[in-house]
Image (cartoon, rainbow, N blue to C red; front, side, top):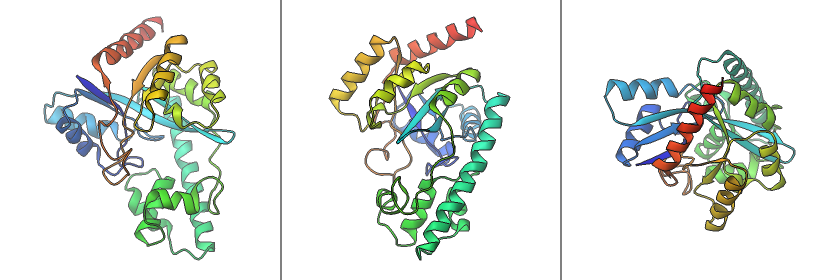
Length: 280
């Protein structure tokens, strides 16, 4: 009885359609999953419809991953049990989508100024959905022969400090946490082990984070223990997931179910969610 609570589809920067993700989760023997696309809910309805149409016995938790900037760190905030019809959330996601598009245009222009043959049309075709992100640009760079992997594309061209990096739109962790809560969801700090400045983990707790993603492919055993103890100290939920983006996304993000949580953790999350709903 295991769940993978961190999965991406091609509605954001994953490789697989929502329907394919569901089939892979079933094949992996999972009892449930959360689709947590970056800054969009577009993958949820196709996944839900596919489960119902095919009468599959798998539990789908509606989720999202909001990308935020905090000084020199990227903090990603996961939201679970999201109310997809929440107007405030939808409006903010529409704004983020427009700002993502504008950012992508600037990155592509910088790459072109460097003599790199890449176009917005190529990136849009790679993205498939309405949301454009740096991973889509990285895939085109690989396809056009400018890098051998997405990791190399980021390191050479588009990550922070590289020549074609463009700062993200302004979106703070505090706003992301509050937005998830306003939409009826549970706010969880994603992959805390990847955060360079550990004081920002404590800041996220101060801002009202409700859980920590303890189980994650790139966390060491020591980090898993550290974050589990931290969650216990502050009475936070424990979650975990593979951060699956597709089979071609590298060792850590290329295998659905690589990191997962058991039914006891899911039961605690659902109980916490029910208690939140009763207080509204």
